[in-house]
Image 1 (cartoon, rainbow, N blue to C red):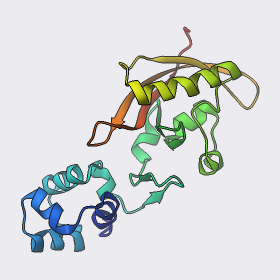
Image 2 (spheres, rainbow, N blue to C red; image 1 turned 45 degrees about the vertical axis):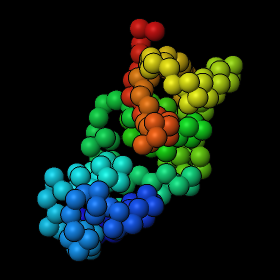
Image 3 (tube, one colour; image 1 turned 90 degrees about the vertical axis):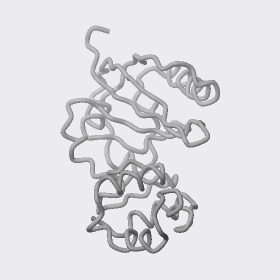
Length: 192
């Protein structure tokens, strides 16, 4: 476990050690010990810390921190997500994909280089008009937050073929209930 993870995410949250210790209802000294040496932290305490920092627990367990160019930080190893036979994607409110598991990358023909350079959710869509519609739809989702419904489209592959897909998605909110990102499950949809 990386001893800098709690400190990293606490710094990103803007909270002080004292504020976090009060929120966790532990002494400042106890919190400082947890932050300096995570090796003896009980999972239940780690879950409380993650909740207070508004990050998934796995972010604090991982030893590898990856910073996205837009300052969204993903800190979970993706081995388990990469094993799933479904696409998992996280995109920010601008449409930029900030996480894509291997199945999603294969399904949508996205390379690691594409993601590093900046790849948007509409980039794999075959129809140019639909790409424009999706940009408008994303703005509406952020501003009005309608009920989630599956999204159906066709993605283009490198060989020119298209594959029909289904996108089931949900909002990711901050503490003020503002949309900060979207989590999507993407699957081939041959009956569409």
